[in-house]
Image (cartoon, rainbow, N blue to C red):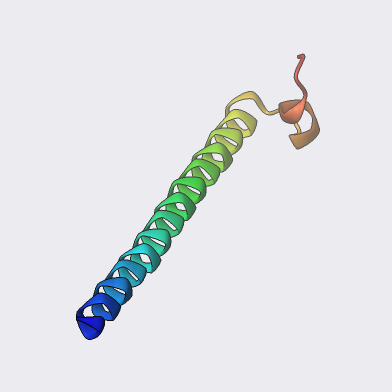
Length: 61
């Protein structure tokens, strides 16, 4: 019975480590995608308006 209990604990631990890794990887992918989109949007704004980077980053135009 002790071996079965230890195996159950190890499986639960492995599942937790897997889930943490998956969630962190997924979050990093979402963050990278958001950053890439923001960069593309900023580049498009600069190219379409002819504004400088400083002006494009200002809150008020």
